[in-house]
Image 1 (cartoon, rainbow, N blue to C red):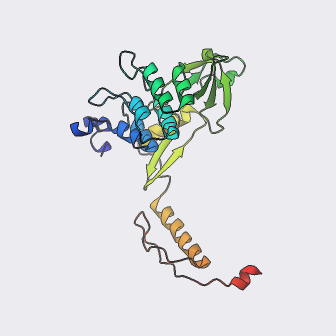
Image 2: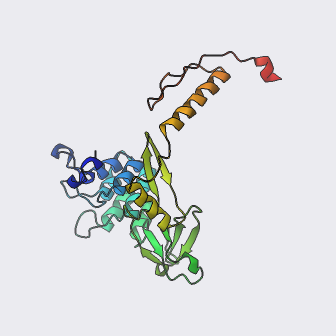
Image 3: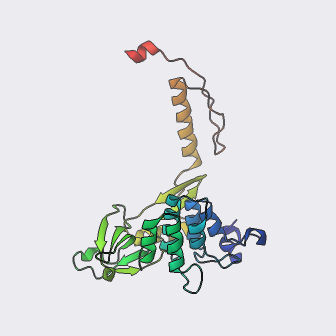
Length: 266
């Protein structure tokens, strides 16, 4: 639906007035749909778009009562990495967001929000001790107030953790063209793609936009896997499974088979 008519900016569509005019990315976040929120941001959703009351996704996520502390932590970090901003002249200023996090008992998250680069995606710069990392991106996972440094995780397949000074970090928010990793939705499944470099990620996204990439999970492969599962269940003597797979592919019905317990003991 979003891609059917990109001229209408459907990715930033808002709900009706009765539903506070909540934008799609806000609904995804408050519904604890992390992957859906990521997909919307990859498609170009504005992370700072407001509902009819002028509230943004990051603030509503912090105050939403149905989300657990763990869920809030993951969602807020996602929004921060995509450039969620604080607005000093409104309720959802940095101080307001910190206060909401503490009220929810998310004190580590509150400490992160108080720091300048906490939760942000950053580019490593001027790192003389390891110059090969300059230009690489990372996420500032934790602020260390005693030394005013950040514990960061590299955006590579190795996920190497480092402690860096803010002088070696430059904020580099995710964008649809430079997202660091990519969540793909194919055949009813989400697949996360990690890369060893930003260039690899950017090339993947560009190819995807040109429809040059192959589906990560094809219907044929899914059908073969489900058929193999059906045969295995039959071999083990487990109850019948449905004739149709969740994706709609045909799968032979596995008949229940008795297992020779004496052979199993031997």
